[in-house]
Length: 165
Image 1 (cartoon, rainbow, N blue to C red):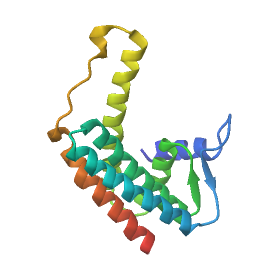
Image 2 (tube, rainbow, N blue to C red; image 1 turned 120 degrees about the vertical axis):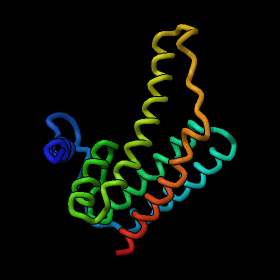
Image 3 (cartoon, rainbow, N blue to C red; image 1 turned 30 degrees about the vertical axis):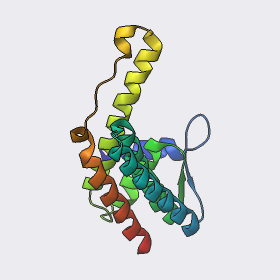
Image 4 (cartoon, rainbow, N blue to C red; image 1 turned 90 degrees about the vertical axis):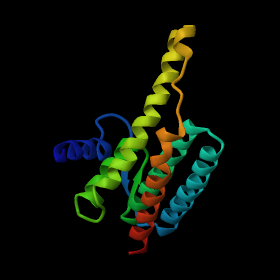
């Protein structure tokens, strides 16, 4: 796993083609604060979606709350990320591997991303195949998403603690 992170970071900082998706920048706490504010907004949106039985959007909002919290943590150490996988790899390297964050927090964001990807893939299949039988989507229930309400809030709170250090 450590080699995978190292490879991802190398590719993100120094891609063979195109612009880097991770860039070293001056530490900018104002930008970090703006990302935390956006994370809090996504937490509020997540709760609204949940309360209105829009469970697929509950997952999306929860994921983005955690993602913006990760971006805030990266700006605190002077890294700007423009791709999700690069941001998560940098977060693992500079926070989890260094013992600043418990590994369980990475699990929260991965679980949300997997669910979001699962439902996005369903839409992709429907669009590509244009077959009525494949237009169906799985029914997502509150039982499927209750975990994200707590996990996303815990994640953002933990990142706020990191920023306060």
